[in-house]
Image 1 (cartoon, one colour):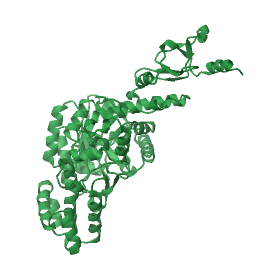
Image 2 (image 1 turned 90 degrees about the horizontal axis):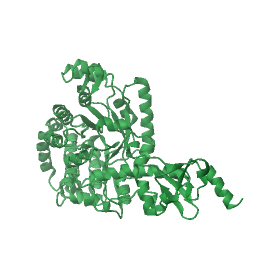
Image 3 (image 1 turned 135 degrees about the horizontal axis):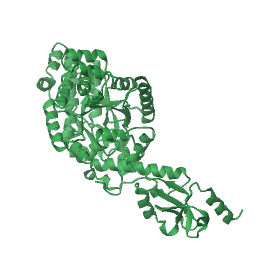
Image 4 (image 1 turned 45 degrees about the vertical axis):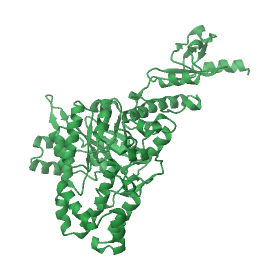
Length: 546
């Protein structure tokens, strides 16, 4: 077969009935990049016998003799106009009033700061304020500031499960109801508590047509199917009845709560910073999605739940992978902590910008210390993980502070606490008298409990030192982060985002979403046999998008 015949046959075998005029085709890499990035228009690729791969945004339908025109070439591959709106579930965007199927998850102690929530909210992106670990007056201050800046949203507030401090959890819910905070991100829950059920049920009513209206939206972060199930199903009657008896919800709200799921959205939380079970995304998300389908078939909710994905998402590639697996939305965390709007100190943000994937490890959690629950933190440039694990080891080995050997106690007082344990206990008493006085009452006759509270002093303050930039305590900074941050840093290397002072949360969000849509286009063209130049195969952060 001659080359000419082969070309003709290839033309006939072209999968698309279009051709592109040569004078409307771009062959340079830079020009191709611009067209590929313009996701608002479709693109047509041709294989020119001399110039090689070319691209155009215009094509004509092949008809009759026009197919053999000398200045036109058959289309070898086509990608439609599919922008960021093609990613995820449009219902997520509608319900939350946002531009993208994306939100920035909470980071405790105000790391997800007012500035972060407001900056993202003004860009039409949802962000959850890191209310966990903060006293009610501080949370109320944040509510007032965020509501003043974003009267119409979007914003959310984190409600973390506090098994050792139920008063904090209840206080937060009372604040959210008082100030009409309409979206709550529930995290670290091991099961449903009266607090989260009250928040959900208190926002239920019927409209003029008798349809159930859900005013209080819940996004639940879960990493276990048994917890996911509880948030996917209606609230338990037993908890609802107790809330009615206490006058915290009405009988009508109890009845309505039995017809709607506990959450509107479920975030399947994979290998994230902070509280995590280190689950791989590729196993967790499909499992939670399958569970959702099972529960929807059982309850036939009028508005089905949405399942999104968080943990491990720090690049456009990871974002697209989550969407391709069926995520209704994606959630980022670690990458936002290094942004200028985050409530982390300059020292911490600078350190985070150099963190690699292997620079993270697990350490005991302050809020669930006695249960042995761990969270993911940065190990590079800090001794916190080693010291925190040592505290847990001592806690499990001895029954009281007094039982700790003198040399071991001396090391703790000089190296970790930098004070006597008696003085630390005095400070702990003052701390909990402000937060939850019952904690002290429970510890007075329980030496093991007293030891736990003293050790939690260090675990709790270490994250605050990181946020405030406490001088002289750098080696004790507790910095929550997952491997997503290392992946982001590798992706951002040699770009303007390499500089932590140039990282803005809305910019990062747009890069991830536009980058994911771009990669979806690249993958579609690749599946049609097109091999793009190496520099066009991935999305790179060349310029700021805000």
